[in-house]
Length: 80
Picture 1 (cartoon, rainbow, N blue to C red):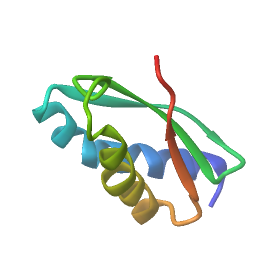
Picture 2 (picture 1 turned 180 degrees about the horizontal axis):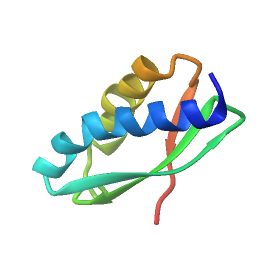
Picture 3 (picture 1 turned 180 degrees about the vertical axis):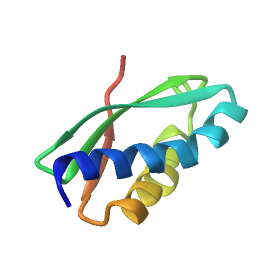
Picture 4 (picture 1 turned 90 degrees about the vertical axis):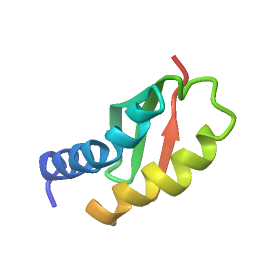
């Protein structure tokens, strides 16, 4: 998978999870993909101060991204 294909697959994963985040007043944006195995995202809106955002990041976002791009090893949130 090329870097461009990887980016597109990660965006597809985020598009799949985004409606769930938006229904709670939040959102997510892709910041970067590093070394083709680390995804940096930024949680936005209500997700920023949410007490379960790390669980959302790991069990929701990371799991969905890995479904589309299995080579991704980790997804981390960069605070704005």
